Length: 179
Image (cartoon, rainbow, N blue to C red; front, side):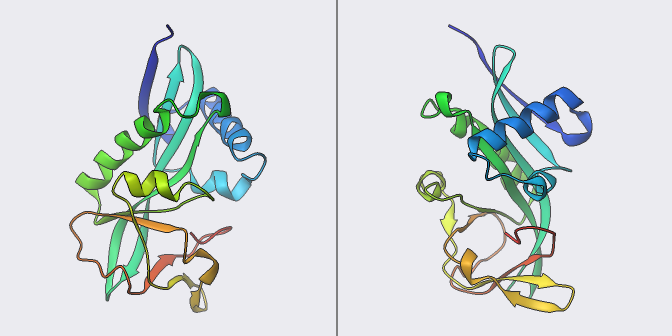
């Protein structure tokens, strides 16, 4: 049986081959629905890589963002680029990716947040992530703009910050998808 290894490294500590393999894995995992801005969102933080032998079979990233809630700017561990190779799904690799990131979210951030891909909400809910029930928005250069299309896909992992899951949640601005 091939050994599974989980590595965690900052973007700056990964070589070009690892970054290229991670990006290719995510493009395939999202069936081509993973673009340049999605990849950009995954950079600049921690990457969790699951390998089977020398082969990369899973990736997830944790980047810092600011999320506004209840009059506070919360330091948020935001999960991006979660994917497992299609022929390796259902074997606990996604859980291994998230275990590594969630431990860091709980120790270093006011809360965790992510936008779940279609059909993935149950996976996150089973891990303790809670669906955001209130309105979501983004703080744009011209002010706060509602993101109603994202209202049903945002999940949070509560840590130290008090949260009203039915309140407003506003993320910081970035190119591409707000959430």
